[in-house]
Picture (cartoon, rainbow, N blue to C red):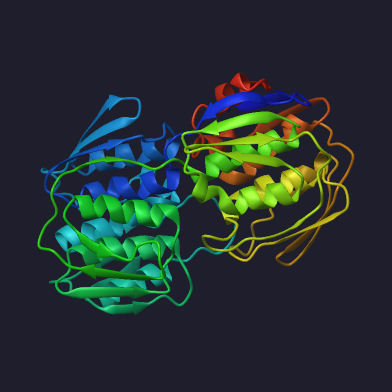
Length: 417
């Protein structure tokens, strides 16, 4: 077991370069096997979820080779195995994208039920509803999802609720279905757009990604492509929040500032100075922080994946702060860890009431999931004394080289076994 040890109350200063988007990478890697060809994927983040997908695709028969730390060559011409029930599949949530990719190309797939972070009920009913609308038969047997179709046909699919995973999964399968597919009430997140752009470069015909109506004209086959993944919106937000809580001055580089609008606006409301560049944002936190209210929503609203990090920041914003979690039903499991550090927080259903305290105090805490782990780092950076964070495996699922990136900004942080 590894843990992170942080000696807090060091101002973060300098520049940090953001890696490729985790949530785009875990969709684009399965999408690459839809072509009976070779793909080159660049700007991949060096994280555990990518490693798990690399191992899974290799076991399925794809020839995968890292040309450098962030560039992967995927040769899918010899894939014959449409069954992905390996342990790697069960580790990550996004393994369900293999269903849409394999169903599209081979018209059949068997994939183990996905794992990932446990913060509430996360069914894949909408995914399966979409596959059925496209003409597939769906069975769930012994925690394995099995989908089959003699052929796939276009359909009009209305999403009962906005779902990033279901939007992408249905989009994958529909690319190689006969006829036209319309997905209404579709998710608009940047990684939905990124996946659609990659598929279009491979020869798909997708219009409307980034809006709530996506229109897909099926094509007979897809070809290989080269593609560069967008920067990680959530990693960027994590460093922006860390700069704010430490009274720092940090330039977050290699990002798309537009993707950060909701967070930038909220930080400015809190008295933090935000300076946007073409591909960077400078965060200057040199004034007393103001209390705010935050509501998570689908894009372009405030992302649920930044909610725990924001909660850590609000613990030291004097006055009452309110967070309303509108996406997941049990994403406050980390709150007890913040309370151990002296935070004043009460939970009422989906609402967290946070009364700011003068300071947090370092102690032993656990990462209960990926983004909660990031929140523990943020809290530890602000806390007086030493914070030890266990369950670092969660953090490594989505953050590349986290201790060195923070260390280069002046944080006193190290990883120990």
